[in-house]
Length: 392
Image 1: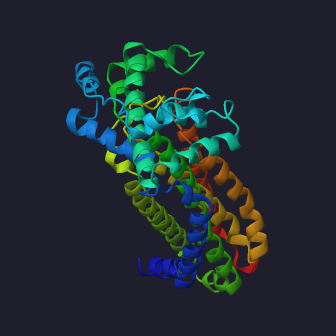
Image 2 (image 1 turned 180 degrees about the vertical axis):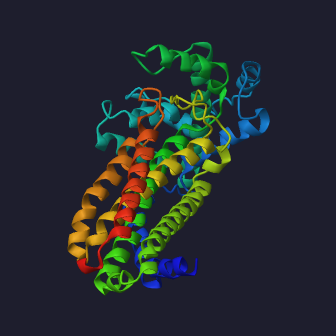
């Protein structure tokens, strides 16, 4: 175990950790930052707060009888001074705009108003009202629309049986029936779910790149040191391959834990943990999975598949770079693995398990790559046990 620890210290050196930290910071700024939701993102957090209040009152599923109670509590649109100002101003009425709702709808419809006209009628509000008044009005409208969205969608998906998928086979229809018994009543914010898909996509890719970054420099450095020549000069030294393999596997585990910890930090800020026990196939998401996953279960499966795939790639690179003592050549061998990681974690793994896609291809792909990595490492280990010292 002491030898494994010594090898692990070579992989997880302070210098390499600093490089890895720099890479993660750059990766965060370039790719992940847009999906870290700021506390000032009003619409995102207002929806999350509203749905969380529903859960606190009714639980993670909204039964039909509870829905009737919820609908009776829907707030009325507050007609105030801003609405009266719009209704009495010719610049708005000649465009068919009579209250703040209609103003917001008109500005959101690019086919209705030009950019210049939208800006003109929006900023005209500031002639009579403060920025705080308009911001408060907009927030109340967001909450009102969110209530409407959840009530209308519930009626369509549960009572109306609306399904946003076409050309479904028998297995898919059977799964939809199963979902309709319970999961469809789940309360989960649409924005939180799909933003979590994006974060997991980026985290999976980051995990794969981090594992490869830990493996390649270690192997090339070892080969350049010519230490294998000395180790293979005696029988016990041949077992050094197993120690290296164990150290690489431990470094992969540490990288996966580190990435999962960073994800956990983002999940708290993005409100994912608030809906950890909610089914992702709820009426508000327009997303149906093959399995009855909650947000937490889906997230754990996603990170597990990403870790398996990434570890398999790293083991393949471990076996290949066992013969390389040139960084340029090692990087060239790593480029296909980088492309594979970006494709699998960034595209195939995104929102995996959706009913419109295959049920097993993505998990099987992750398991297959892990299996191939283990096989490559084992075959290389058998070769190392029989290697002739004269080859050095």
